Figure 1 (cartoon, rainbow, N blue to C red):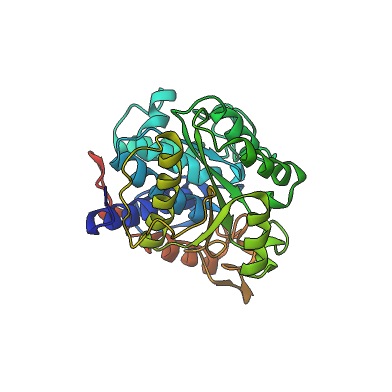
Figure 2: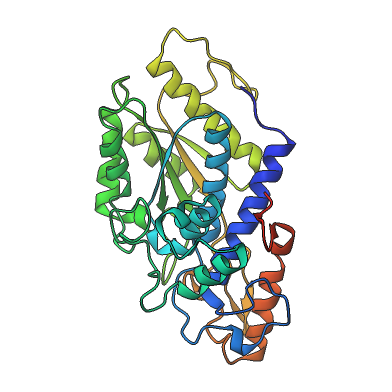
Amino acid sequence: MVIMDGSGKTYVAKRIRAADYLAVAQLFLQDNFLLERELSFDDIKPRLLGHWGTCHGIDVAYANLKYFFDARGKKWDFVLGPGHGFPALQANLFIDGVLSEADENLRGSFSENLAYLCRQFSWPGGYPSHASPLTPGVICEGGELGYALGAAYGSALGHPEKTIAVLLGDGEFETATCLSSLNFVKLFTSRHNGAVLPILHLNSYKISGPTISGRKSERELFEQIRGFGYFPIMTDEDFGSFEFALRLFEIFYAKIHNPSAKIEYAYGISKNAYANKPPFLILKTEKGAGGPKYVKGKKVAGNYLAHQIPLPEAKNDPEELKALEEWLKSYRFNELVDAEKGFLL
């Protein structure tokens, strides 16, 4: 079933824009959520706490995964390793309507719900800055990196009906727990288990410097992943490259769970196009992509300075306030929503 078409590309691009906007709005805004007037200091939260740098990559992965699996009518689970990128996760739960099912305070109009979502983020008595047990489907606090891959494999063990995509931060990829969990792939080439798709989010920086994976050559990183028994596939924000990688994943597990099934090879994939090993995606993005490139002469996007709040003085600095307004307007969020009906994706 080939679904790589214009409508899919348009949907994914719009969803990423919407989720990115919501992530930024949660981090900064306490009013003027649809930018109906010029942004002012009064619109900015008095305390800015959260993490932006990984959010765009989370949104890219989630949008592509959702379109790919939903278009096939296939149930899937999403496990997020870098739970400190909670603004992105919560943005997607908000778009999907999952958050409103769990929080009765999100039962008003779209404008009312948007205001509540943003005001309550990283706020006393509201939503934490990290994924937490309050989040629908979350079992662990989001700042403890390392165990996402192990949890994904454990969930799929003995459950062939499960398809689980797990996003790993490249800082997380340095932890002993994550690296040791890569060995679980040896147990998952049986039709009795579910399908697990590891995705390494390679944005090359963590909280205070570069990541090890981000400083490796592509060949060195690929050889590391191959050594554990995977077939590495490098992808980026391009819709087609992500679709290609997900199609390889689909073909691999289709062959395991139903060896006699007729496999449809598409996207130029032949029967010998890849090794007979489970795919491991590497999603390469810029740290803090979409955010400010430079702030007061310092490189932010594509640097560790994008990890947390890239405009920490937006509450009282006119230059940073203006940069924030330009950043928010770049997503053209008003094209993606209706104040009463909600999202137009």
